[in-house]
Amino acid sequence: MQNGTRLAAIDLGSNSFRLEIGRVDHGQIQRAEYFKETVRLGNGLDSARNLTHEAMQRGWDALARFGERLAGFERAQVRAVATQTLREARNREEFLLRARTVLGFGIDVIPGREEARLIYQGVAHLLPRNEVADSERRLVVDIGGRSTEMIIGSGLQAQTTESYRVGSVAWSMKHFPDGQFSASAFRVAEIAAKAVMDDALNNYTRDQWDTAYGASGTIGAVGDLVAAAGGRAGVITRADLDWLLDRLLKAGSAERLRLDGLREDRKPVIGGGLAVLRALFDLLSIDEMRVAQGALRHGVLYELLERDDGVADLRDSTVARLAHRFDADEAQARRVGDAAAALFVQLVPEASGGASASRAGRALRKLRWAAQLHEIGMHISHSDYHKHGAYILDNVDVPGFAVNETHALSQLVLGHRGKLRKVEASMADETFAAQLLALRLAVILCHARRDPEADALAVELSGARGFAVRARQDWAERYPQSAHLLREEVLAWQKTSWMLALHLD
Image (cartoon, rainbow, N blue to C red; front, side, top):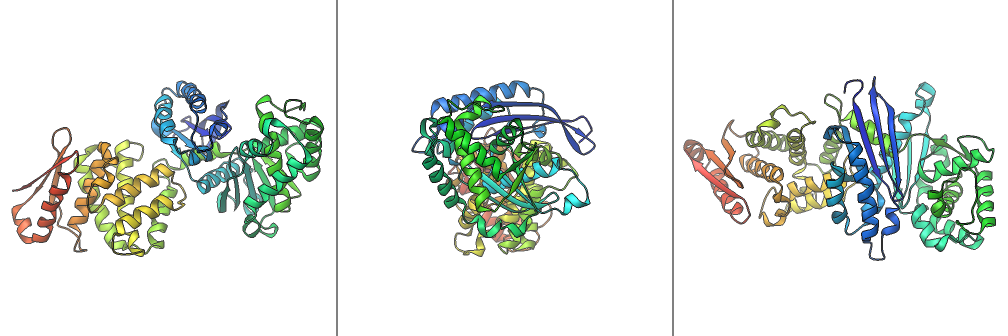
């Protein structure tokens, strides 16, 4: 990306929504603007894990304001990510449908470990870069509204990532109802937090890291309180946590709490956040923690920069590792991928350049990923392997991918063979239908696990919701089984809202 290019990251957190706009400057991103809205989306989850309409409306209103500020941005310059509350919410699609419209851009719901990886990227990019710093083993912690992420890494590379369902909003609602503070409530809250995070004892032991860093949210707020009270700026110690607990207990409630540096929007969640932070200090034997400037949104910005054309995309290596992990036939994946790409370009000519900045280019790239992964289910069983592959993609943690991205891949893998009714909802999207047809035809052409003839098939759009496939008569005679499978394919599409016509010339 050229110097001066604007990039924007939106973090739909459980407590706050944040918009960070930066400008590219010689491979770095300099802040241009920053906006924060206290939405408390996490407070709006009811006992059935559905978001209330009031909570959704607060979110939509905030995103509408962000959307107004982002007018004129291209899609490749913006990424919005949603975290734990929308991972949990049963009615998240209701919220996201309108949220994407008012924002004007897509919104990715990211898995917990992917959130942790992006947090580390944000922290690491904003720390000093030198030989000593790059060799430092870091523990990075981010206590959010409904989840806490822990990462061990060095340099720009996260090595161990995890996400735990414990956070300042959730713990405040559960253990400090009506904002009331007591010593017994804090004891129970800390014990409960340790119970959730106790497996961190195995992966985040004190001998595995040199320096502890805290990112964003609760830890940033506690750091501000400590500094305002005369403590070391940018550092939190056990003594600082004891001091803060004493102040909360003396106040007795969030409403009566008066502390320099404490914002009004942080008061309702400070109790739960402090309980989780104290539990972490005990659990991981932390003596002091440095307050980091980087956060999730900064990791998203640098990920946007790295996904620019000509820069390696983490998702490419992730797909390759996943295919290798499940022992997929690499040669067959290449055959199917090449054939599917050639067919898709016939249907969507603007994809021919392959530029990831265009919608068609991104669709082509995702089609190639689906081809690489279409046989991973065979590692479980040859019978219904497409269903096993789809299940894997819907449930595996894959660095670089959002939940909705892996689900889209799972639907292509699920639909690449057999009846089409199972993916009919996804077929309402014309791009998905074109991807799916290209993949299914490619699998037919490569069914004998050999390279198909070049230009064996020609495909084109036919009418509003139809496709036409043309094959030479002499080809059909040389490959009668492939021709038979093509005729069967026509019958399969007749049971959908799309039509497929086959012409043998």
